[in-house]
Picture 1 (spheres, rainbow, N blue to C red):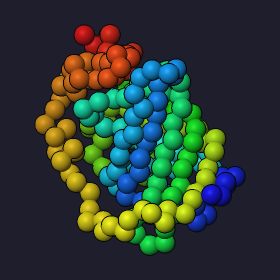
Picture 2: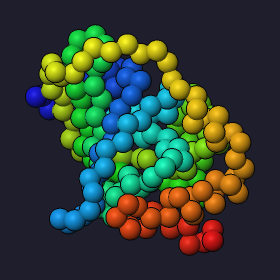
Picture 3: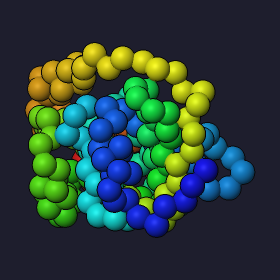
Length: 189
C-alpha cells in the first residue's frame, strides 16, 4: 500500500478513467448496517481538486449513504482496475449530501463537465478527501467494460419533479435502520 498526498497526475487519470466505483458508509455506534454501493455512468463523477471529489446521486431503492453522511460524514470511495495493470485506489474522507432542494445544488452540478441527463439526480455527494491510498489489486479480476446502462436515466425521464419528490418521501424517507434521510421529506409531505 502507498499513501498519496493529493489526487493528481496518474492517480487522477486512473480515478477518472474507471467506469465504476464503490461507496462505503456506516452509521455511528455499534449498531446499524454498513453500506456499500456500486456507482457508475459516464459523467457522474468529478475530481474537484487535489482533496475533493463529488458524484451525482440518482434516485434509487435506498439512500443509506445520505443517512450515514448526515449522521457522521464518514465515507470511503474505492476504484478498482478491471482492465490494464492491477490497482485499487481508496479515497477516505468526510462527505455531505447536497439535495436537489438545497441552494448550492445548482452550483455543484455545474462542476461536472459532461453529466448525463440530471433529471433523476436526488443529490450531489461532495467529499473532502482526507486519506488517499492505493494497493496492488492483484486479486481483482480482469473484466471487459461494454458500456453504461441507460435504464436508470430512462426510468427517471418518465417522472416529473413532483413524482421524484414523492419518491423521496415514500421510498427514501428513512434508512434501513430507521435513520432519517432527507430533511426535505418532512416539508414535502
